[in-house]
Amino acid sequence: MSAETFTPRPGAAPLSRMIRAQAALETRMLLRNGEQLLLTVVIPTLLLVLFSAVDIVDTGEGKAVDFLAPGVLALAVMSTAFTGQAIATGFERRYGVLKRLGATPLPRWALMTAKTCSVLVTEVLQIALLTVIAFALGWSPQGNPFAVLLLLVLGTAAFSGLGLLMAGTLKAEVTLAAANLVFLLLLVGGGVIVPMEKFPGGVRAVLELLPISALSDGLRDVLQHGAGMPWGDLGILAVWAVLGLGAAAKLFRWE
Amino acid sequence: MRSVFPGDTPEAPDRPAVEIRGLVKRYGPKAAVDGLDLSVARGGLTAVLGPNGAGKTTTIETCEGYRRPDAGTVRVLGLDPVADSAALRPRVGVMLQSGGVYAGARAEEMLRHVAALHAHPLDVPSLIDRLGLGSCGRTAYRRLSGGQQQRLALAMAVVGRPELVFLDEPTAGLDPQARHATWDLVRELRTDGVTVVLTTHYMDEAEALADDVAIIDSGRVIAQGSPEELCRGGAENTLRFSGRPGLDLGSLLKALPAESTATELTPGTYRVGGRIDPQLLATVTTWCAQNGVMPDRIAVERHTLEDVFLELTGKELRA
Figure 1 (tube, helix red, strand yellow):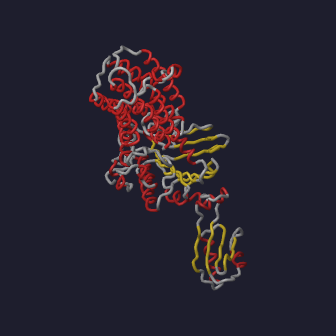
Figure 2 (cartoon, chains in turn orange, cyan):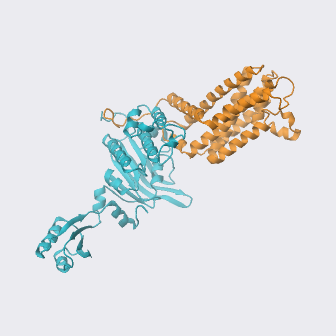
Figure 3 (spheres, one colour):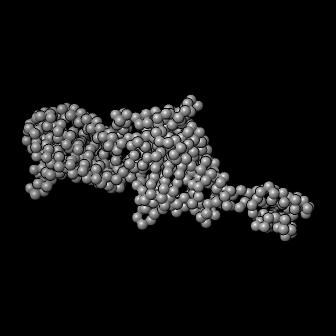
């Protein structure tokens, strides 16, 4: 260190550089984590391939893949925005990462922006992979791409709010267990691979209000049936997004 | 490159780097910090010394903006750590007692990241080298030893070239070699004009490093000053010597100033207590010469901060 001294020269990096660096680090951490990849990549891929190839679930009229692909896309969004983000953020809180970053020039809102960017990058990778596989399995999607995009964005917002709410209020171990359990329950009960028609009417009415049901149903309406804007499902997702993000903003504890 | 950058310190340069007045911080009914006053001079190295649970970390974390005072005021570089957090964060380096790194991040990756959040960071490879982390730059944080994790945390505190660093127990649990490497770096920070505030429960650390020591007990500063001032102030020193057993100390006591003491600790080992100055030393050696005693191993024993702490609180520092 002869050439360099510790002579003070403080200063924050430009915001855009900070957010970019933070988003890149978060994405690397996620892609390096084996359990996270299991949730975000392996499980959705396996479900898509397995249930399209083998006639286990009665998916109704038409090709199985046309029913399954929208559900698996919804699952991919949930796995990253909710389960993955909740578990990662819960442990970041537990290990003092959020606390330590709070002492750097990175503002908290910029940290959350970076987290969102990281979630979106991961989702783009997931969706690209799943789309390629679905096409290979003979998928023929229809409908308005803008409606699909809107559903994915609102779904991401809804699941992020719930994931961050969990990560910011519960202990990391509880978040880990609960986020996985919720993932599993919503996988089964949220219209991802099991059509909602299989559930009795009363139960179904409740299940249809879940964010995962709204997302998978909305995506299916558009991609499988060529519907226009699925306003009902978008409305449900918007309500979850407002409630989840609002509660997270109010209740999130950084330490 | 030792110049102070103009424009970086708009407030008066003689104003203390840290000013704490009447700080109170409660956790439930218990006050962790209870009316604490502390002033830290710019450019110096201040050690906050106290036993575990004295309120050191709470005090430091209030300065870092993590805790809101229940009462009292805290100013860091003239600013409010909570309200002016955005302005302060680039200027203040923080070393937490533990954690702060992604479990899956590599040591060098994490340091590079913190560097990237600053405008003029230090060169990461040379800092890694400097702290002996070169062999584990590619190792995931969770696989680093405790000492390596400590050194990474220290590197993260200084990489942004702050004016002021808070180091919370920077050498706790380090082996002697790593401890000295950390001391060297801390001294260099001070030489280069960085104000350093560190907490420690190691006496020798405070004595070896600090210009100024604040002794904290039960959430208050009970003494503050340079190590020399603290060791001199009030505490009496002792003089020990060895000679033949059974000397008549009565005649020595007559020759010594009134408040002095003289005792035979074990046969042939003597202790003289009181204000030990050159005159007293001369009196003792004269008395020895008069009595035909060759005083082996004559030694003046200075009080350490440990003694000072014990006297002030009646407690062992490490207890």
